[in-house]
Length: 453
Figure 1 (cartoon, rainbow, N blue to C red):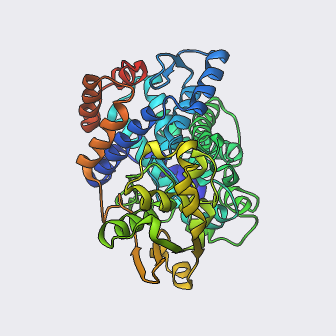
Figure 2: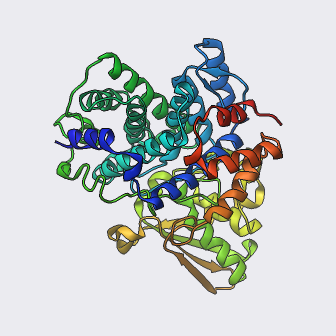
């Protein structure tokens, strides 16, 4: 009974059960996510959604980051989750097959502000939500490959786990919350490169809160929603045969959050990151110049291509999901940053001329080896006939090649400083570094909501 196992883990796990390393990794992910959320504050899609929420109104329970007003907890999580994901600068994880923190943290913060909860409660619920997603994700690989955006689908279950924990639901109520969230879950990868992609993360955060609050009131759902023949896992996989008995395997014994989160150094789809690093290395260490390139062979797994779907991008958002553009940008400029994902930058003549020279190849070994799921090898043929190549097995920002607290803090300063004053930025960073000691997160949320710059 997989749903039972997961519900029991949610209810019975306490802060004292958490490994110290899991808490440390969670604090890094939370700091990073709040930074990129603030950086996404003025993106058009976020402004549209914020206007919609403001027009609808609602009980002021939780703040919209950087906007100076509150809405209901579910609406705040909806906007903040969308804001967190809008730049695609947020973390990702192979365990959950997507972006965990943007679906989880906004739900935790909104509930924490509504009920004046402590930093320990936020950390505990966030780690529980991550582990729930990580113990479902590997069983649902087919789910991702056929077109579902797991950040939204599995993210809805993780967010429901968070809200259920923070509401102190019992085991039966948690099973109901998971069942409700499973029917609310959605998100299509075809919307990558549009405003709707980041909306998926906001939906997940909101879904989790709504599902848990309804379950608390007695709203019913199927008690075995994960493993049932027409339940979450099998249906989202298109009826494929799945190892459903493995759902929840290792819960409470092996914490996947430890070494399981990649903090992004570049603001684009995680499927572009090993390609960007390979291109930068070829430029810096092998002297490859964009103007000298005849053709580029991009050797990756097919899974990478299902996420980086825009081979001929025309907009900034499409550029975030285009290996062809990200490779071109890296070779042209020697860096890839937030300012490179505008329509004007993507349509730059030099980039548009280089983009068609990049072509995918999917070697069998990169299909069969799970350790090469994010790997990329660039083989560049120059106009003089010479060939240069470089392979990156795992992306920068992983535990094997971490940004570390110092690197994440620098990124946080850059991102949060777009919205907050330098004093408020420093205060938030100090508070988040000692989150387990915070008795009530409302003061922190007040600073984040105010957007004092």
